[in-house]
Structures are given as C-alpha cells and as structure tokens.
Amino acid sequence: MNWIKADQKVIANTYHRYPIVVDYGKGVMVYDKKGKEYLDFTSGVGVNLFGHGDPGWIDAVTKQLNKIAHISNLYYSETAVRTAQKLVSKSGCQKVFFANSGAESNEGAIKAARKYSHDRYGEGRDLILTLTQSFHGRTITTLSACGQRVFHQHYMPFTSGFDYVRANDESMLQEKINDRVCAIMLEVVQGESGVRMLDSSFLHQVQKICDDKDILLIIDEVQSGIARCGALFAYERYGLHPDIVTCAKGLGGGLPIGAVLLFDKLADVWQCGDHGSTFGANPVACAGADYVLSRCDESLFQAVQKKGAYMAEQLRGCPKLSAIDGMGLMLGATCNVANAREIVEACLEQGLLILTAKERLRFLPPLNIEKAQIDHGLAILFHVLNHW
Ligand SMILES: Cc1ncc(COP(=O)(O)O)c(C=O)c1O
Image (cartoon, rainbow, N blue to C red; front, side, top):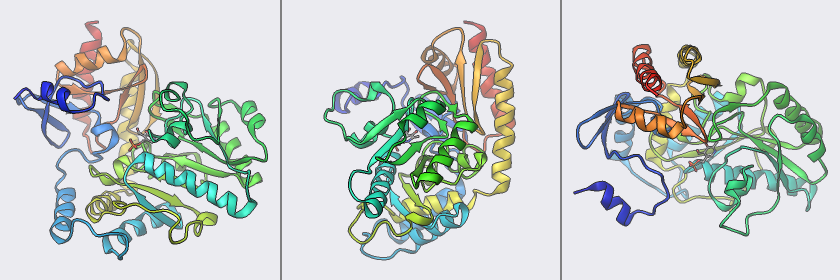
C-alpha cells in the first residue's frame, strides 16, 4: 500500500506533510515504514515530553487501560483527582478543569474569564486583549483570539469581543485598556509565530494593569508549559501571577489532554452545568498526565535549562543562523541562507526531524534528550546548512 497516496485520498488535506510514513518510535528516535531512522527534535510538536515509548509512561497508561478506559464525568475518578492534585500543588492554582486539547483549554479560559467578569460587573465588560503574532487554537473563538490576520479569513463570522495589542508595545497596551476589558491573554514565549520571548518589562506592565484593574491575566502555556521551558510553566521564570493558565501538549506525554488552571479569585467561577466535556478527565489520558507530572521536579527543570542553554549556545555559534530565541528546550532560529521549510526537508533526508514556525526553524526535542544526541542532531543541521 502506498500510504501517502492513500492518505491524500481519504484524509482532509489540512496539513502540509513531509513525505515519510512514520511507523514507530523509541526514545528520541523515530522510524519510518522503510526502516529509516530519524532523530526527533520535534516531540510531536511538543507532546512526547520523554520521547517515544518511555517505559514508566507506558506502564502508567496501560495499568489504567486495564482498569477502565473511560467513565463519564458524572462519577468520581481517582486518576483525575490525583492529576489535578499534582497540578494544584505544583502550580498553586485552586481548581482544575480538564479538556482535551490546547484550543479547548483556551476556550475554557475565555469562558471562565467572561463569566467572572459578568458575575462581578454585569454586562458589557467582556473584551479580551490578545497580542499580535499570538496563537491560541483553531476553534472559531480561539481563532478570533489569535492576533494574526491570516487566521481571520474563510470562517466569518468570528466570535466578537477580542482586540489586539502589538507584542511588547507598552504604549499601545495602555491605549487599549478601557472599562470593557475583562482579560489579557498571552503566551510568554510565542511558539507558533517563531518562538519569540516577550519582553520582561512588557509582561510586568501587563501584570500591573491586571492587578490594578481586576483584569484577568490568562497565560496560554499550551506549548511552553509542563517543563518545556525549564520550569513547570514559562511564566514562573518571569515572576508573574496569572489568574488562569492553560496547558495541553506535553501534559499527557502523548495522549490528548488539556487543562484550565483556575487561581484564587476564579476558584468558584464555575458551578454545575457551566462547562463540561465528554472526554475531559479521561482516566487513561489522566494516567499519562499523572505520570508526566510526577517527573516534573526541580532536577528536570535544571536539566532542561542546562541542555537548552547548551543547545542555544551551539545554535548561536552557527554563522548561517541568527536571532536564536526561546527558553529551555523551546528554541527558534532564523536561517540566513534558505527558507526554513527547505532546511527542514533537507534535514529530513539526513535523518533529523525539526519544525518550522512561520519563517523560522523551531526546536522542541524530548526533555530527556542527551547531550550527545543534541550534538548529533545539530551536526546534521550544520552539515545541511554548510552545503547550502
Ligand atoms: C500556544 C498554543 N495555544 C494553543 C494551541 C492549540 O492547541 P491544540 O492544537 O492542542 O488545540 C497551540 C498549538 O500549537 C499553541 O501552541
């Protein structure tokens, strides 16, 4: 069977795929149907935190699978409680709502923010400010939240109640604040737009405005969270105190799960019937997340910071790359000699998987990658770049 042709026949053509058919993965390696091996600097776009087939993760997930695969949210579940307890104790939030993806978690965050504002201030205070170049998901509402014009086409009408501030523009932020604003939503490291860290002074201005005016700070940690940036959440490294945090991707370690973390004043914003999800808190996905969270400790954070700093330093040493940015093992680089997709395609041929993000190269390797494996992957990348 030609799986590429078969795919094109029956699967909606929404992805610009690379021409390999993945068969299985082991550790930081992925193997295609022809038996060719690839070093994985993508982690399934930041999902497989500990690489492929991590024995502890497989054990946790299969144990749960053997007990019960799914039960509705009408009943209590130990696995969900354990996972939420870990999120609460590690983040300091009060309550957790489980969703199934990043977009769904952000939908939840937007709903929680509007409900808080409505309960407290009544109608008309429902505007959410987001940043240019942000990415928050692909539902109609989270597309509205994306501060990128390219996402605001085809699907009109979009959800209203969003306005956009240029990332890092402190005077524009000040101008956009008015009595209608109920929340500011942002990624502290903008992933999909090229891995760009926001300025610390801008973030602290956002925090101050939120504190002064009871405007909620929603931080989207879907890509940057769960140890990816060398802390449980990237915002911790800036000393921020958000009201709502969303996460997904790495949380399940390879299974679909997202979470909305509700801090202090949001703890009781939702009551029975206000929100829900059939698959949210699925016990198998929660078992994966519970295992992932059990490994999210200071020693992992330190290791990620160290490996990330090493990788960034190596990338900075390459004359064909510039504007290296990011935190921990979430890094981006501009390629000076070719467009990013061409480089990614050439690396693929040489046995290395990397990502693009807009016009930039993006690196999201598994967090347990070893230094020698980083060196091996970068040697492939630099070899490709040197021959350009
Ligand atoms: C910051 C951010 N938010 C939200 C999303 C959407 O997540 P999902 O694709 O799981 O819906 C992504 C996906 O890349 C993301 O990077």
